[in-house]
Image 1 (cartoon, one colour):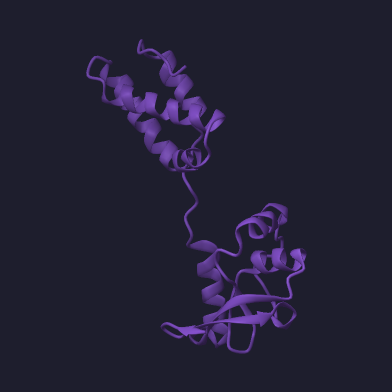
Image 2 (cartoon, rainbow, N blue to C red):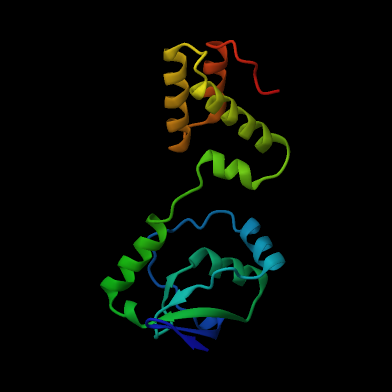
Length: 171
């Protein structure tokens, strides 16, 4: 057991954790998460109040139950004891995380399609920086990169810029 800024880490019986009212009702497919937990262990424990009410980690808890675990390491947070603090913590946990952008997601998966995605992004970067390209093409490539960073798909931008330029394509 350890403490850190209002937090205690300890093992808890899975069935003793009270899920209570949640904003997220659809937990989605838990098979991949359960498989990850089975292979690598629990990377981030669920967070509960001192009374055992779940604050963060409903999907992880459901996957752990699916795996048949009887106990789980939890973070017990004393600074989320009131109903308002609990709701705000749940909201922050679900809304303030940042999804990977397409470049980050592609870089995490070795081989195949992800490599091609990185190649296409690299091509767009090359065009955006190439002084031999027409200014409008360079600006379009730079704008496409900004859109990709914001979550836009890579292939349509790549195809559009590829059609507008004479720079050799990513193979």
